[in-house]
Length: 125
Image (cartoon, rainbow, N blue to C red; front, side, top):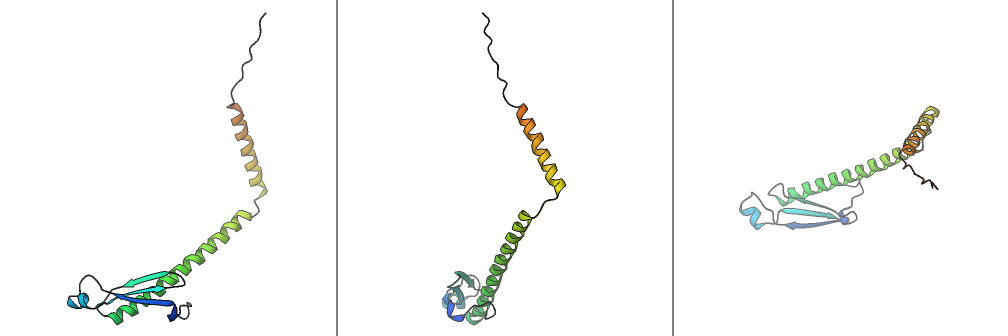
C-alpha cells in the first residue's frame, strides 16, 4: 500500500451484514467489509469468507488491485494521446502529398459535373 501511496488514514472502513451462504454467523455478525479511499473515491466491498478479519484483508487486496488498474489505465491513456499527437505531427512523404492533392483535384472536378445546368431564355422577337 505504501508503494502505491495509499495511506491507512485515507481509508474509511465500515462493516455491514453479508448475504448468501454462511448460516447464523452471516445473519448475526457484520462480516462484509466496505472500504472507501477518500482521495480517489474508490469504493470496494468484500464478503468472500465468513470471517470479518479475512474479509478485511481481501478488501484491502481488492482496493490495491483496483488502484493499480486505474493507474495503469491513466498511463495507457497518456501514452495513447502522446502517440496520437506524434502521428498527427509527423512529416508526410512528398509522394503522398502529391497523391492526396491529385485526389482532391479529381474529386473537385467530379463535383463540378454535378452542378445544375442553367438554362437561359432567349427572346425571340
